Length: 340
Image (cartoon, rainbow, N blue to C red; front, side, top):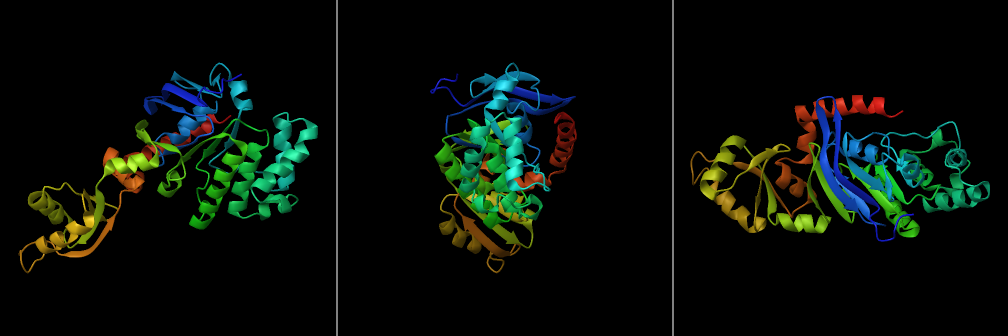
């Protein structure tokens, strides 16, 4: 029995290697009971590999981890009884109804027969699908299927619910709707939710987030504290000569800029006040040879700025990096053979 004051998840120096490739590099963290904890990072950063180790689908190469008070290597069955899992890829049977999918899950987890019907009604009402319980899943929309998968993960009353990219492939409106359901479920069930995402806006829903890059945790705190730590506003400019603009920013303002998502991007205190100075300095009529500015935007610190401050790139840039792509392909190849 887990002590009420123990963390729901405790991880110490967790490592996972696939041959010579180290996908997870000694991560350590704790997740409190009833906390919504997020793993934020680009595809291929090691998020899914970490979640698979915590769910006992992959055996760690080294290190230790406990979930709901049970060791993920020595007490695999106890861990599995205490967790719910929503995979990144759909796993529902489309030929069955919503109710049949949930009944099958309840049987696999040994839910007593007299509890199946009331629990099914409870979780389906939570996700707004009770009136579709007899509908064939193949006729459901993507958002409805995702909500049903979350309901299925709750059928056996887990203490920790793992959500691996729970809204991937969904439109922004549906993603927001899913997160509204997730937050309501967490409050009603009082369970711990551990989720992975590479969507910055989703991470805002978490109590705390760990930013992961290249198999390592580079930052861990609440979204508000992480953004406050960045401080500077983010300025992005479109110019006729980006390399010349970067050099000019360095020489004239002492600012180190980079090209990110197709624009010259940098951080500066008081971005809105800085822009007039920038236009004046980059005015070719006053300073011949200066690159002309064709567009500018200023934004307050976001989690993407936090990611950039720790890694030197945005998540989108990281996902487009060729090395990242190779790592992601390797992870998918290895992970495909591990889920058995």
